Image (tube, rainbow, N blue to C red):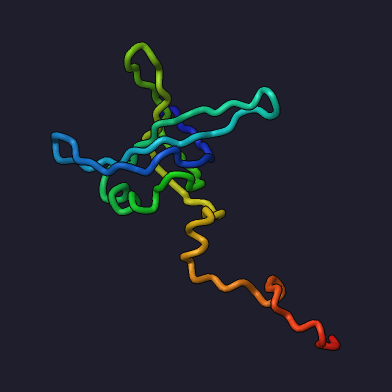
Length: 123
């Protein structure tokens, strides 16, 4: 087994499907930045999560979501290109929700972060 751990962002919403054998699999791509400055590039991984776990996670696996994936590294060939694939064993959604999710979160900023504080308070 070739185990790998990556941390990146989901490139497009996850797609849950069922194989001809009746097994459920959820697939999505993850972008990982490599290098910095002018040498910065993006490495793409195709990730699959098998079984009920993938199906239940699919609604949370949306474009732009930061996550960490650990699993078995492999490659596949298609139309003369080689793609890096990971069969996920462990998946952790990271913090840093996108702006549109924060608006719907119901989170109320702490008083120190609000701009409506009264300046006449002596302490």
